[in-house]
View 1 (cartoon, rainbow, N blue to C red):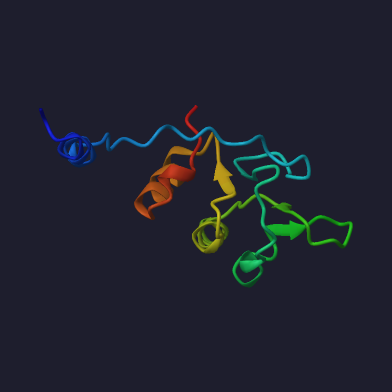
View 2 (view 1 turned 180 degrees about the horizontal axis):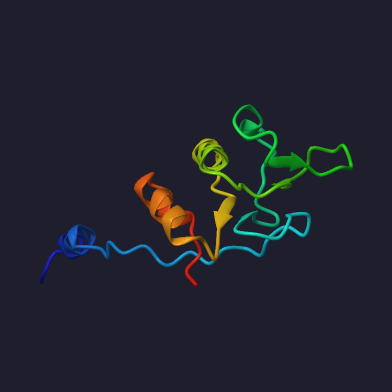
Length: 121
């Protein structure tokens, strides 16, 4: 008779899948201005770390609660894109995302390690 613990050990040591399931982003928060970048609705944990790098692009809800941030203005220049990317890097839960991104900006996001925050079209 085979040792049942050996069978458990062999199952535990067996290779496991290494693929990560595709992430389905939440819808944008309604306060986001239209455009490429947005903050997912219900994702913000009020960390506020973006305030040092992109205070002109992101904002808190105007109710004064600091309960959720949103994209208040879309980047228009390469310098503003760089600051939005900084905000994406420092954000603690990857709530800032991009969609329908210009190809050159999408490439910059990928090169900066932010490709996982671009929605597939």
